[in-house]
Structures are given as structure tokens and as C-alpha cells.
Image (tube, rainbow, N blue to C red; front, side, top):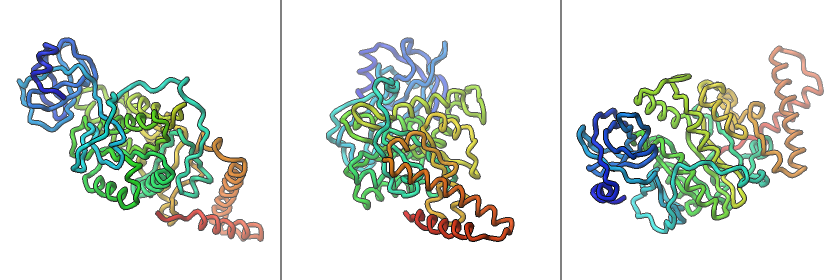
Length: 405
């Protein structure tokens, strides 16, 4: 960014802060400003135009500065952009593209706008290549393909992160570019994740984008969009990218806070009416393209195994299936605690070979029979020879799928 006086001289428009409300600022002036444009305050703080009213400009703060009523601000004439390039590999950055690991960013040869329209259908191709996660149960029963958008859903502490990290390490070692977005998490978890990448020896193929819960609301909101923009840069170089968004329920809550502060009309569960659009315009940017692919795994948190929450069902509607981590299966001691009956993959099976597809069908069919047999035993029914064989084989299948991190 250039300085305040440069933008004032070149664009000739000035605004004044009229009202402050946490991360939102209402200003007068700036007659030709447009939504999404960046504005610069005289203190050097940065904001993004959230919406416009006939009298005022609503600005979402992207920095934590000391702005007072009466402070001056100017238009910049640009939308939010970040520097991208191979220099991002192995780095920890914030959603504004600033390094968080102490060293300076180098080798960033391109500048990209963060919020763009999703690519058209003519630029997309069918999902054809399998995406190996390294988690046997998922790879055999709920397979994924490169370019698939698969929701990872489950209660807290049911092993979702272990599954995501296993997938990320497997893909990084196979040569894919892996991008992990931590949305509004605590500083300790961000530091731990960065150390994990170093220990696993996959830093040269990974990018970590993180915003902490203490960051301004605008920065937390921007996190998944920045991650997707970086993924698009590597996709355009003809590479396969795995993008993990952890997690989208925190992102939705953050957007709800911003909207309620802005006095938007609350809808279901107090979420704003456009929360579906906010997520859909992001998720739709992933897919399998003529140049490369972006496989996205958005994460959603359920409460007491409830899959029918508002944000959860919204995300299901815009993805190609979901992997459900069941708290009951977790409490039984099975790892990973994936529920194969409630998990769905809409395009994963088409990437399998005929043998894998037959094996997957056979396993799914057997697991249903095994589950029915276990429920039948709850009634104290006597076990026949056939039932005994099914239960013995079922125990073997369970121990085969049991996989620690």
C-alpha cells in the first residue's frame, strides 16, 4: 500500500469517521466508493467497504488500530489483493498475506484479487483421478477424487483434525500442494500446526494461512478467501491442490457477529440471509479444471451428532458429499470414528478401478449386515452359525479399519 497523501492526491476524495462499533466503522464522504474497495485511514489502518447506505459508508476494519470519531480516510481504488508465488511454500502467513513466522516473503511473482467470481462450467472437467487420504476406511468405503468438494463434519474431539492431517501428509508426500486454513483459532493451535508440518517433513509442499480469535473480525472473515486465492495460483500452474478450511462454522459465526453489529435482519438461528451465498461463492471456486484441480475439505462442527443444523446443511448443499465423524462410534473406541452409513461421496466412486469399486460395494453391503446383526443381538436373541460367522468377520473388518494417527 502507498501512503495516505498519495491516495488523497490521486483520487481526490476524503471521508470522515462518524461512528465506531467494534470492527465496523461508519464514515461520511467518499462519493464514488464501491463495495469491496479498500480504504486507508490517516493512522495507517486498513479497512474494506462492507456496504453502502445513502448517507454513510460501512467499513469493516482489517487492522487493530486506534481510530477515533473524526479520523480521516481515503479510497484506494483497489480491491483486496495478495502476493502469491512459490515463495509461499513452507510459510505461515495471515489472511492479508503478511508472514507470521518472522522471515520476509520472497519469490512472490504475482498479485491476485482475493474475492472473484467462480470459474464457469466450460472451464471444468469431470473428476477422474482418485485422491488418496491414507485413511483405509475412507479410501475404500467413502473414496474421494481430485477436484471433489467434501464436507468433513462431526462433534468436537472426534478425530476430524487427525483425519485431515493424515490426508494432508499423504497428499504432500505424493507431490500435491497442500494449503491449510485455520479460521479464528487460538495462537497455541496455530503454533502447534506449524511445528507439525516441520516435524512431518512436508513444509516444502504446504502453505499455512492462519487467523487467531484475537484478530479483527474482518481478518478472520477473509481467511478462507485468501486460502482459495493461493490454491488458484498453484492450480493455474497445472498442479493438484488440497485445500482444508478449518472450520466453516467458526467462519459463519464470525460473519453472524459482523452482520448483527451492522443491524442486518437476522434469519434462521440469527444468521444473516446471505450466509449461504458467502460460503457458496467460496466453495464453488474449487473443482477439477483443464489446468489442474482444487480439492476442498471444508470442516463443520456438529453438536451432539446433529447433522441437521443450519450451517451444516447449507454446506452439504454445496459440496459433493460429506464424511461424518460419529461421537458414538468414537466412544466405542473405533479410530477413525467415521460413520460409513451416514457418510456420502457423490463423485468418488467414479475415480476407482473396477476392482476397487466392487470391493467398496461388497464392504458397504457387509457392514450394513454386520450392523443389523449387532442390533439384533441387543434383544438377547440366540446366535446361529451364520450369525456367528458374520460377527467374527465383522470384528476382523473392524480391527482392519482401526487406524491410529
